[in-house]
Length: 272
Image (cartoon, rainbow, N blue to C red; front, top):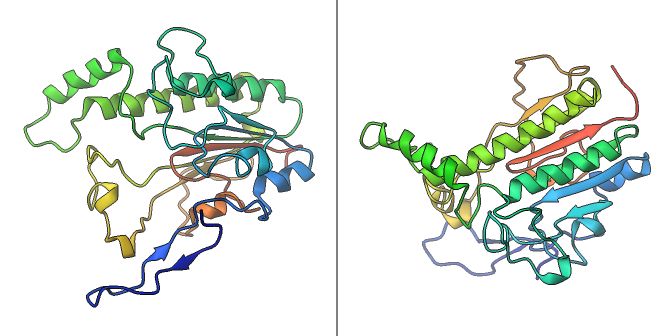
């Protein structure tokens, strides 16, 4: 367990740098964005992947009122499709046979938004997609298998499972946006979306290589675009070259998201 950053004290003669020792737990002493918003009366909910360890380092200890399914690993337990293999203590059961984990996460997030539609809220939806285990809805896999079969030989993006996983993510982000429209909250809500670095399967076209091999271990980094929208605050199709890092998503900063995740911030009242 590592709560503070460090680096190796030795390295091979051919190494250019001392390899960093990554922090493996999100120290609860940090004042998070969720905690900052709670002081201003926001309801806070986290849905999906946490991957910053279990209690006492879970989302519930980092300023969130709700953490669903309260699971610390990178991917869903066992499969994206029910029956899952979450511990019985979580009491997390599918609502129907073969339920997709992203469908369920979006359903829970929509219920949270609906319950707090008349007050300020902060929703962080960190999708499990598109991490291992690699599986998807059979009908979507078949859809993308047919698409892949029609591509020229050697085309980079031809993995039908990956395509199906991305669509499930996209469909459920769309459900969240539709909910804001139905509840007439879109005009006063800040939305932020940021992608992951790359698929470790190497299925998407990538300017370098699959994620584990983008850079040597001592130089692991990636720069990716993010998107933010708030009809009252942002102009359409405007680009901003400013950079921000993943940990910024936890600090009291303007961009509340990281890594293939959607964040939804609905303020108390409109501001210009």
